[in-house]
Length: 359
Image (cartoon, rainbow, N blue to C red; front, side, top):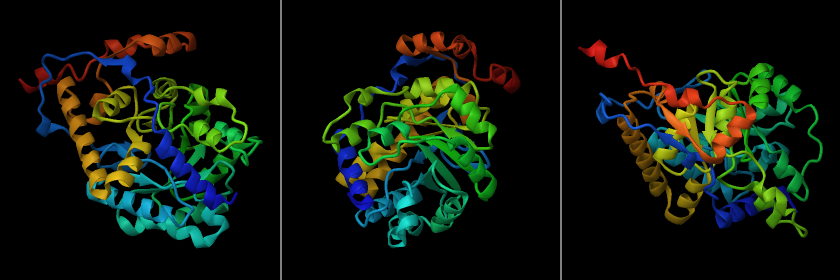
């Protein structure tokens, strides 16, 4: 099977399989604030990822490219990003590095959004030279390096060796002129992996937790003999954020993995995310309803986020990261076993001095 055919297989199976919804965020509950001391009109969604300032914490995350049919998808998502002022990432560009005829399927996002924040994307097998070419291809503002070990293992034609990935990422960081983001594709992050990635200079870690598009399930659908136990593999989005936050300082963490609405985005930010990525839900919206529907969904999500921030009394993204949340269920049990202290999340407060300052 050609790489181009595989890319279209991924799109078709992603649309067919949807999202599991089991991202763990239902086990995160905001503590109600009867005196929030703010209003919707005072809410700012501005945030930072590494060296980049984003007008909104919403990110259209990496999805596709590498086939003639995916050019339309990337153009449509790029147009939605332009209409809403959010950042966007393209899918893995390795196909275009091997066949320059496919470059247009990625560059479509830049054509649609000439001045927006756009992230390039490659796997950890990439060389520094390939990373530079990927950035140049779309005039990228950052580069995602995706981590997809389980997907590759289930993929019939996938890689079987992952030795030296961290050293390769370090070389890329040292040789490209844009921030590098290490991104899991849906199997989750750990505190150890986040710490090691940040130690070699990546600007941010995208936790990519389970609960969204399931690439093990997608690859199993392409196999003659499935490996079903990998369909349930991985750390949930909530667990991945809690683990990664143990290592990630402010401005270094992206939450993704089945995020569907403003409440789940707000919970992800309260667990430490500085931005949140959405992919599968927006792809489905684009294919079924078009660009304007994608833009409307993003605007709705941003408005929902403002409402939640007002309810908890958080005027800014950093303040939302201080909102008290109680963590229960399997997520709490996981954290207890892994040594993540969740009591600190329940006992903090959003700027308790504000009322005194304003009097």
